[in-house]
Every structure is written in C-alpha cells, then in structure tokens.
Image 1: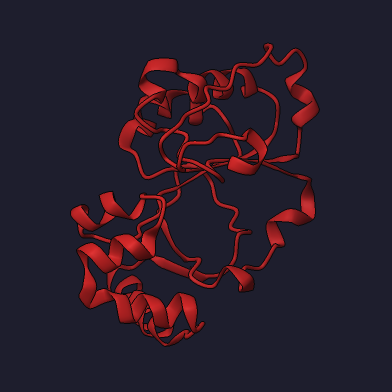
Image 2: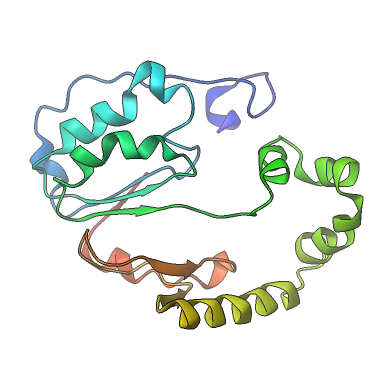
Length: 194
C-alpha cells in the first residue's frame, strides 16, 4: 500500500482512516464479492475509535453482496449483530501461529530480520520456505491439519476460496498455504472487490 499512499513511514507505523460519502445505492453491490481485510486487519485497535468497518457493514445491509471478512481480532464479535443480517457473509480468522509472542512480532515490517533476531532457530526453516520455495513444511502441516480436522469432526478444504455455507454452519478449516494454488471458484458469480 505504501506505493499508493506515498507514506515515508515504515509499514505498520502509519494509518489512513478511510472516510467516504454514504453509499447511496447499496444495491449496486448485489451479487458482487467484497473482501474486507485483504491489506490490513479491518478490526485493528483503531477500529474501536473510528468504527469505519462497522459503518461499512451498516451501509451494505440489504445490498445482496457476497461479503468475506478476514481478521485476527476478536473485535469482530462487536459487529456480529450486523454480520448476521447479511445473508451471504463469511468470516475467516487466519491462524499464523499459536505462539502469541511470535505472532505479535510477525506483523513487523521486515519479518526475516525479526526472525533472525528473535527466533534464530527458525531462520533456516523460513529461508527454506521463502527463499528457496520448499513446500515440505506446508505438506507436513497439511497432513497434520487433515488429521486434526478428521479427529475433530470438522470439514477440511485446501486452497479453495469458493466455500459457500450458511452463516450458522459449523466452522471449516481452510488451508491457504500455497496461494498460487488457490482455486478461484468463488469468482465465478461476481466481480472481486477489495
């Protein structure tokens, strides 16, 4: 986003609060796909102050859009009253790690420098994945997740963004490890919007 905003600050050291004119005709979004959270978490701490994500959800009510929200924050619980009124809304909660200290550091601007400084034992793994393109770690993790899903009675899907489920359906574990292999099946019915 820095190339679009010309911010001199490092990524994560600035915020732009988006203000827009009220959506006059929300029906123009009928059957279109809207993805909230593609660049930054829509429920970051500033959302509690500015409420822009909640404002967007309120304005989209009754539009008939296909809404997907990705967040790591439990602040989304505040907006469940609105999200439940959107008939084609999906919420995903990415899990990068179960180590909270590591998670907090992962959102720094230069992840490899952070790993080298704070978790040097993990550096060879990250270099293997990101610098050499090895998939062995993801394949191992994929096997573990399949087993976990089976033991837990949950559905498991790999690299498919076309999951269509009722809001009150049980959760699905979705593996998006290899972004280049994600099936774009959800794009068949409408335009992608970010």
